[in-house]
Amino acid sequence: MKTFLILGAGTGGTMVANKMAHELDPQEWRIVIVDKFETHYYQPGFLFIPFGIYTPSDVTKPKRDFIPHNVEYILSDIELIEPDKNRVLLTKEDKVINYDYLVVATGTQIHPEETEGMAEDGWYENKFDFYTIEGATALSRFLKFWKGGRMVVNVTEMPIKCPVAPLEFLFLADWFFHERGIRDNVEIIFATPLDGAFTKPRASAILGDMLDQKGIHLVPEFNIGWADNDKQAIVSWDEQDVEYDLLVTIPTNMGAEVIDRSGMGDELNYVPIDKHTLQSNKWENVWVIGDAGNAPTSKAGSVAHFMLDVLIENVLRHMEGLEPLPKFDGHANCYIESGFEKGILIDFNYDVEPLPGKFPLPGFGPFSLLKESAANHWGKMAFRWIYWNILLKGGEMPFESQMTMAGKWA
Amino acid sequence: MSLLETVALNDEGFMTNPDEWTKELAMEIARGEGIAELTEDHWKIIEFCRANAESSGAAPTLRQITKGTGISTKELFALYPKGPAKKVAKISGLGKPEGCV
Image (tube, rainbow over the protein chains, first blue to last red):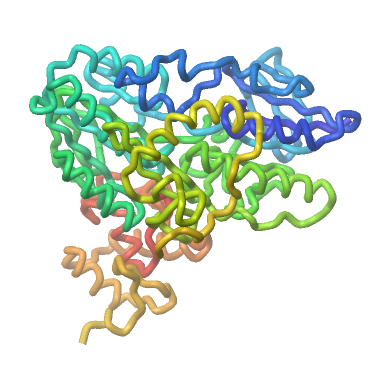
């Protein structure tokens, strides 16, 4: 009996388990998935919790509900991965799993403690993140009774999970304060290490204009050095202060600590991979899906989904002694909530930046690229249902993994 | 005549062919970025970035620079104000560092 081992039962790992359960012969293969938590979070939904649009129950379900019955699910932390010995040590009962193939899907976590002064005085009192269920719900309680003041949203350093999420947070906050009738009492500031609103030039210009129109003040090239809790300010390495009444931080993002312990990661604990085949650079039976790897694309669920078919095909080819195919193009597809029941959609890959046009059907849509529309907003809201019911179970989506230029204006 | 006019640049002013890079070019780009003179510490970082890019194919990120050279983030910002990773990459004749995705 051979073992196909998946580490992590988040978006990427769960999709791989579902696909491989169909592909592998149960007489020959045992499929095992390991995760330390019982709850699966719909992470894109965290964004909506601070504004009372979603409650925690809208974004949580048991992980077990999404793991196929013929996959063994072990609830345990991982002590160590030993890729040279093809084995993984678990913390639970000191169990050892020897594997033939390993898929690393251990994801990305936030580390506010990487910034001096951040996760200390005032943490979850007037300093919050919205990348965890705890942060998002604490912030929702704060915003419910806030009378206004100076709100600063700060990105600590790149790369971050879902690079558009900070912008969506800003747009939704603008809408939320309008609805509450306190927008005139709130100053909104966005301090980012980037030189504009976003990483890609054309989208950055359009999104930057939207910040302007909504009266959101952009502080570019702001690299936070530390949080000064006495002054209630964040301070950049070049000692520029930005004072706040409410700080919403997007902390340093890093891969899992077990990747570091096992000596498998780069300086941010991401596993180096071939960005087109998704195979580890070092171990040929180790594959990486989603934001656990160092592929230079967005760390988002849509990207993990576009990686899925390429990864499965390449693993199956490898089992047959064939070379992996360099088919992953870095494709990302993000709905950006822009407030007032509108949204923007962007679609891009390693080589092509987000462009205007229609998606997925050229000329028709129904979604508009790089332009605000109500349909884009409803697409985003419908996505939660698609995520729980189709995507996690490895079901078919109505578009290809690779990006297409059809319907775009270059 | 400016040396920069003799080499290929992209829209954001990054050199597209690292082989065309010379120390004289680095000094000229640095002046354009508001760094009047490149000191020994500046050069140490530039050399690290050139070597890193040669082996990995990409300009290093800020964390790779601090880890690889032992220079603290604070010192790095003092040497190359605002965005050090981006600035060093530009001065070293390399593309924009990945991680900006």
